[in-house]
Length: 157
Image 1 (spheres, rainbow, N blue to C red):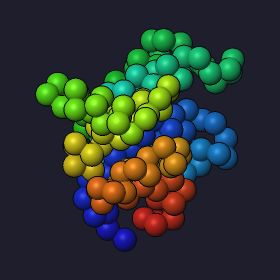
Image 2: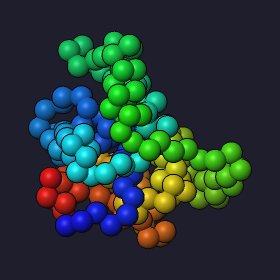
Image 3: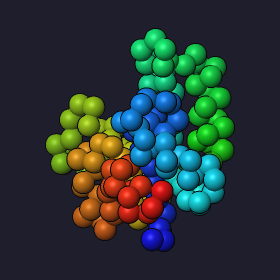
């Protein structure tokens, strides 16, 4: 099946696809292989996802944890070099915060709301994440939300 429109990948897919974490990350690994091969075109992610990838990679348990320089290289080569990286434009930030407060977004949920807003404003038609329930609000804008394994199955990776 052909991909219909821009695809946005969340941090969970970046971490699972770029850091060997066993069978649980098999779908994300297939996705990143598809991106590296060019089969999935040039996908999108958020600058926040790049920072989260670096953060997670440098605080994983021993044996999985990356040194800061290696984590930087990973973000630079495998994300910045292959993805369009987006953010909420400055003129939209106040409106985003107002909307988040009106929707009673609290605590750490603001970070996923920010990532979702990056995807929406960048024109994503599909968001792939393994934190699907944090992104279901995008469906009201006609943006599909799939888990990594669902994306792999649907697009034959």
